[in-house]
Image (tube, rainbow, N blue to C red; front, side):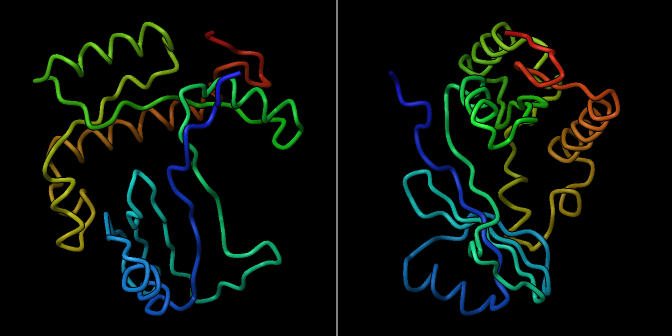
Length: 190
């Protein structure tokens, strides 16, 4: 049996003490700030721990950790999304889990590889894949360094335009209650 999960992508935590938390992860452990969004008193940051592992931190001045701790969620890397979702439903851990769509990001049509990968993904997953492509643009990297969202930094650029288009597509799917991949609603594209 092959491993379904190839690793953690990120873990998400909340903190009341932003400065102490940032000092611990950045100064003590050497994590590097990858992207920042939102401003105090509700800051948010994605820290790179190396090797494709990230820590997502949200500031919440009213936060009180539960008995389970400060972890809000964690994201895993997998090449077997449909099988992982089916197993999670089967265990009863989340019996209504469904996949609302797959999003292609960092897309660059100028390369030979990206259009080929897009064709493969769309052929295999069909309507599960959002029609909207999120392009690769340097503006995504610039925005956080200026303390802005992409919508503030480059409101009419290809990145912000693509995310607005994705938001409309996502909302339409939610309105239509579209879910995929052996979802409890019965709709499947496998």
